[in-house]
Image (cartoon, rainbow, N blue to C red; front, side, top):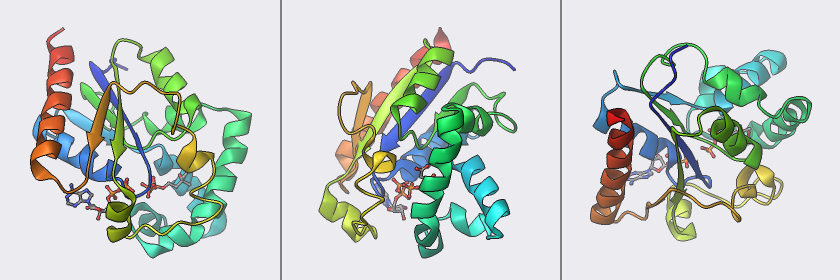
Length: 192
Ligand SMILES: Nc1ncnc2c1ncn2[C@@H]1O[C@H](COP(=O)(O)OP(=O)(O)O)[C@@H](O)[C@H]1O
Ligand SMILES: C[C@@](O)(CCOP(=O)(O)OP(=O)(O)O)CC(=O)O
């Protein structure tokens, strides 16, 4: 495997816009340069297989995914307890891993950040995507006990110094400036 030049690790609460930011950044850098990896990808794949569910429907921002979220969290925790880097490793193998920029769209736990920091110390750019609660609600967020008050959503709320913070509150100009700052950070690493 060729090591990537930059690894963007995104974190943020449900409906803050992690996937949206990942695709905006990918479009800016070009799909040939850049690959989006979701830690929840291999988790959902294996969970769907074991529970006879529709993997594709677990991938989009749908009610179907929300129906199974709590149980997927529980199931994923069991795997992570055995091996904290299990999903980080699986998610970043395979198609796209030869591209120079990786975007990991969904870090949730300190163990996720530790994995990327220890394997890609110089390349990592950590990014927190934030949005106000009313904005997240307008995008479909509804507080759910057992989901929004557990590590899956709160594990990185405090104690992390993010390299970049992107505020995604439907303020196009501010959003654009922050994306440009992030893209510049990536380009600096591509030049090194
Ligand atoms: N800046 C934005 N402009 C327009 N739509 C957005 C923006 N940010 C997020 N959205 C939309 O809000 C919804 C939730 O965003 P998403 O990226 O799926 O959030 P997350 O991955 O954090 O749960 C999606 O339908 C997405 O397209
Ligand atoms: C069980 C999960 O992997 C489900 C994650 O699904 P998405 O990554 O699609 O979630 P959002 O972007 O927050 O809506 C969460 C976990 O704790 O691993």
